[in-house]
Every structure is written in structure tokens, then in C-alpha cells.
Image (cartoon, rainbow, N blue to C red; front, side):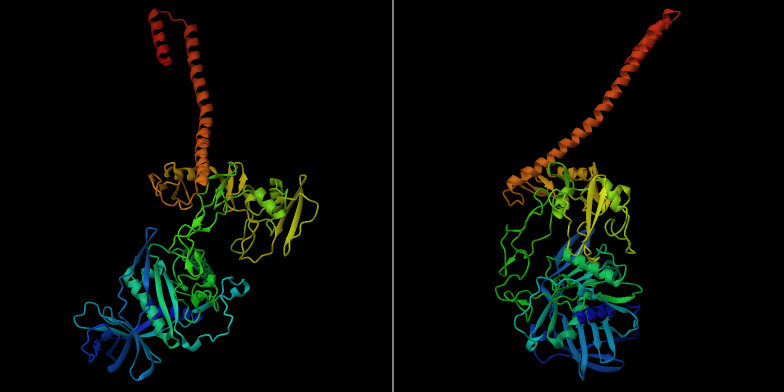
Length: 629
């Protein structure tokens, strides 16, 4: 699908980058529609139409055929102040045509007739753009020649994919078949994302931007017609408020960021391939793509084609077979979507995670939601973070065997301070190991005590030991590629000191995280607890958003689990109140003692002093009484 990506990138520039494409020889023309001989006013009349268009004082006849390349359930996603709005487009789907110019067999024309004529007429060696003239009295159009001047823009092709393992879900036909047997019609469902800069460059109008994208898809379709490949635009996402990923940097960096974003946010939207269209004032490259990755699901950003297993899909057309409702997903079994309420993702941790269930309408399981960070776990010794209760002792035991524990601080100080592959806080932009800093030493790589005399063996890994203050410390470098996360990196939420946890390789106070979880859970009316989206998950018998209204609906929490969760949530409230009381009590005692002492001193001085007259004694008595009050 590299050619498809290259084509889309070029067409995007063709329609958007006026500085890069010289619009010369502007002409005002009036296209004339050739009337058909039939009197039938039905839809058949509009399946094939023809126009006479003057170009350079010469008349050309253009023959067009109606094409459909918008999905029946075509959706547009817009953002407004961070919230995503989804709506079905009311765009006309019957006014897009493709064809050629009479007498020029190698020509290609793609036009929209929704409002005037808008599109491209391409001869063998020259192309023209046409669009309606605004505020024109007659059927006037602007015709201009398109010339690409950006001949030095690079194309980035990421070939690092060869070093990566293949996807387990790749379907391989047991029987060898031609790549396109007998030219069966092929369909590609495409999801296109327009970043904020391009959205603004195209006028910040959702309808205008949508029409631009449809033009691009129409042009791409016209070039793939000879292969009987139809590109179907299934959905369009406009980053109208801000770009969801940074679009600065080199091509490979941008490709990786978009790939990660796609894997996190596009799982529930039907598509075979996804493209990100961006705008740059002075681009150094045309785009980026993983070549030769048609059937690798996780690399479908721009080039992947997913055809699924033969039991559900016809691999020749990439379309579901009759009766099949799905072909992949945790909620897809035997080509059918599982019913609502079936567990599709069990809890990763019994105290900190939430089980997910199928909704009965989607083959995907949905986003992985956890309990809110800061909820106590393991008898209030630790806190939940990212759906897990991070006990460093338990991690050490799982890696180095029974009896291994998290190493004392002196071991971390010995190993982490070296800032090498065994002890570090990650790498910087120059690929050099980062020193953790004294406060953050435990937030780098995991260091454990080693309880046995038998040497630890790790295949494809290097082991280092350190004898510090009667403790044998150990850690391992797995010698993995830099793109693979370090298995021994200390995870966020791990305890690094009394009242402190690791967050992004820094040892920070945990009270702030706990307080945030407590404040969020207060909105759940005592009948629920917050999740990782800061929304209430309610006890059985109550319904969101604030768990106040009773309901007999389905709850994600079983009765026995919810009681434990609420107990831990309320227990944290009691602990917070008790901590505040214990802090305030000494202050109250000291303040009371000082007030009483001053009161006694004033009385003592009043008795010792003698005044010459009764009037002065009366005044002194009054002052003492006032100060006592």
C-alpha cells in the first residue's frame, strides 16, 4: 500500500498547498452540460453525464460515470474544547463522478457536481483544476493549470519493521492464489485524520475540509479503478481544536507517534487503513510509511490491509462473508458479536483494575479502564496506580525467586549512581543514560536482594551483583532493542520512601494522589468509586453519573467486590480525618497552655504591685479583669 500512501500524499499537497503548486493561466470558463436523449428523470439519468469544457480556447468533451466511495455509515468526528462530537454526515453522496476526456484514452477526470464542478482534469502530461466562481451570475468556473514545483521533497520509508516480530493475527491462505485473482473487486475502508494546522489552512470550516478530503479520496479512486480497487472513506476525524499528537520532528518520529495514537484510539472505528494529513510551511519530506506491511495489523497506519480469517472474510474482496458480523476482536467469536455482559477483559489486579464486558454491538472490548490512581491496596500498604498495586518486594520475588526482596537504599545508591545500562533513569535525546538524582534513585531500575548462593542465570541477559552492608544486591540488563520497554524499569506508583511513590522516574509525595482520588470519589454519593477517567463506577443498584439514582441495570462490579472497594475508599477518608486530628491536637494543646500561662502571670503581677491610691487599684483590677476575659 506504499503506492496508495504516496498517491494520497501527493493529492493532499495538490489540493492544499497553493504556494507549492503554481496556479497559472487562470481562465474563466462556462462548462456546458450535454443533455441526454432520455426523458427519464430518475436516478438512471445521473449515472452517466457529459460536459463540454473550454480549455485554452479549445472545446473538450468530458464523459463521467457516477461513483460511490463514502461508506453507508460514514461518520465525522469533531472536537470542541477537548470533547469529541460524532455525527452522521449529511454530505451528498450521489454527486461524485469519474471519467475521461474524449479522444484522450490516457486522460483522467474526477469531478464533484454537488455545487458546480469541482475537481481535476488530467491529460497525459498536464493537469487542470476547476472550481466554481464565487458569486457568479452564470455557470462560470475558474480553470487553472497545476504544476508541482516541489521536486526536492524527501519520502521517508521506515524499514525498521523488518526487525520487529510479526503479528500473531496474520491470516495466511493455505492455498496459493494470485495477488488479485481474476481482478475481483477489492475494497479498502479508510479512516483519515486532519491535523489542526491543515484544518486551519483549509479555512477552519468542517464542511469545506470534509469536501477537500472527499476530493482527495475521489482522485485516488480514479487512479485505482483499473485495478478494480475501491477506496471507501469510512470515517473522517478533524482535529478542530488542537492536534492530538505533536506533528513536529522528523518523519520517522511522527509516524511512530501516529501509530501509537492509532492503536490507542481507533480500535472501535471500522477501518482497514488510517492516514494522517498535516500541513507544513516548508516541508522537508512528503510523508512517512511502513512499506510492505499490508497484513500486519498494528502497522496499518497508512498501509495495512486487514482481511481476517478465511472463516469470516473473503480474502479476495476483503469483505465479510454472508452471515458474518465480525472477524476479530475480544468480543468476536465464530464471526459473531458476543452478547452484552460477557466478560472480555478480566481484572489485571483484583484491587486496582476493573473487568470489561462486551456491549453486544461491537466486536471490540472497549478501552481498558482501571480504578483511579491513589486508592489504597494490600491492606493500605500501597496505592493503586495504572490498574496495579506495585509492590516492589513482589516484583523482586517474581524475577529472582522466592525470598528476594526490594533492595535497601544503599544498594540503589551503589548501582543506580553509575548511570549505565544496569542503573539509570532512562535515556535522553542524545541516547545517553540519565542519572536519577539522589532523591529519585529508587525510581530508576529495579534492584533486589538475592537470597541464594546459586548464581542467577538469565538467557540473553547480563547480571550484576553488588555486596553492600551485608546485602547481596542484583539486577539484570536484558539487552533488548531500545524500542522495547525495559522490563526492570520501576513502574509508576511504586513506593520509593515513606509517603512517596515514583511517578515518571521521580519520587513524589503520595498524599496529593490520594487526595485527588478521595475528592473524585466524593462525587459518587457513597455508592461508587472513581475510575481512571474520573467518572463514577457505581455499586449494584445505582446508576451513573453520580450513583444517586437507583437502577436494576447491569453493574461492572460484583456485589462482593464492590463492598471491598467501598470499604477501602471510606477507610481512606477516616485515615485522612484522623491524620488531620492528630496534627491539630498538639497545636490546640500548645495554644491552650500559652493562653493559661499568660493569664496566671498577669494575675501574679497584679498581686505583687501596690498602688498609692484606691483609684489606681480600681483601674488595675479593671484591666486585669478585661485581659482575663
